[in-house]
Amino acid sequence: MDYTVSDFLSSYAQGIRLIAGSGGLVRTVNEVGILDYELVPGVKSSYLRNNFYEGQLVLTTFLYAREAPYLIVDAIKRLVAAGASGLAIKNVFHLEIPDAALRYANARNFPLMLFSGDTLYFDNVIIEVGLRVRELADSTYAQREIDDLLACRDDVVAARGHALRLNPSLREELVAIYAQVEDGLTQATFASLEARYRASGLVDARNLLCAYDEGVLLVVSADTLPRADVRAAQALLASEVLCGEAVATGVGEVHQDRGELGDAVLEALYAARFARREHADVVWYSELGILRPVLPHATERSMRTYSEAIMGPLHDFDAENNAQLARTLGAYLSSGRSVDRAAGELATHPNTVRYRMGQILSLTGLDWRKPQDMEQLSLAHVIEVSRDIVRL
Image (cartoon, rainbow, N blue to C red; front, side):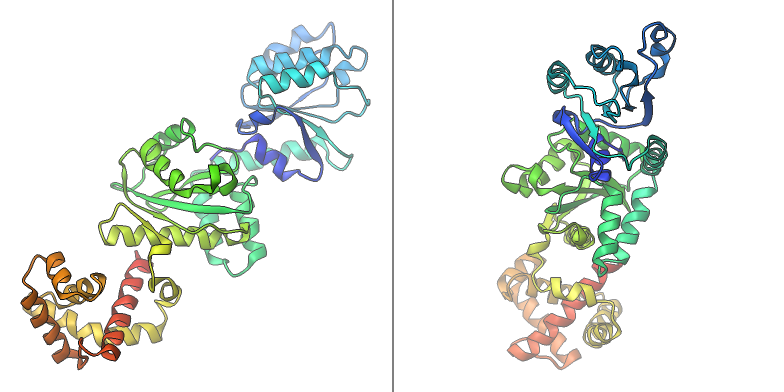
């Protein structure tokens, strides 16, 4: 995961503002440096060659331009040529920033930022940004943060903190998309996916792509999409980033608060797990129906006891007789309680479905032809499916 200029601005929103180069907010920051003496006439040839690097966020007080304001534009041109990520200015000498500097920065998508007070110190910024760069570069960082996020979903303040640590540039309105990857996710596979992500239309400092468990998590700030078109994002992820490597993809619902990121991630995870269970390519959380209210409680003892009392005898019978009663019940329910459609799904005769449903009645005492009994069979099946999804 990368730390970007946008993340820097979001982290220091109270003390730093953007004045030019908004098109470069997605630039990656690898380290922080200081520009003060390097361009002073007479010494610049000694320092310039080795002091600025690609991916470096540069801080300055304009000390070098105190007696020569024309050097402001020259410095920006040199930093752009060196591949620097941006320039943050603490204008302690109150020099006027030339319009030519702003125009050049805008033309080159080179972010120029201005410290808006005296409460931020260069040393602290260098240490804090360096720490964040190292954290995000750790391949296990996102995994840990998301695990912690999921564990504190009910604590909105803590959840917002984890969301901002994952990406300080995330907006309030967001949606999560999770894709399980064929044969698991290796570092090499993720590096390849990340490279394709950078070349896709999804890349934006306000979005987040990271490895999680056996797949890839994409969190999209809704305002980065035309008309918040989540389906377009999912299609782009599948076609340009995953390129057929995903086993199953789940798409959560749009949330209006960063504090709900844990809920958004869990929705995408559940939808992807359901897709894998049902051998589907993509499942939207909104399509899970009655599973949605059951999933958060599926592992509770009362739920487990209820489901096992009904489904247990079916599984025992199937194991002892090489039968398919549990699968037949699932097919009957998923087909809209149609014997003919269930028979088609199972590739068997409708009478076989009726016979198996009769066996279910014998084992459970619940008559599939009676609405109240069918509700109990349906709920037991839904709890079992939900438990499978939660355990995956």
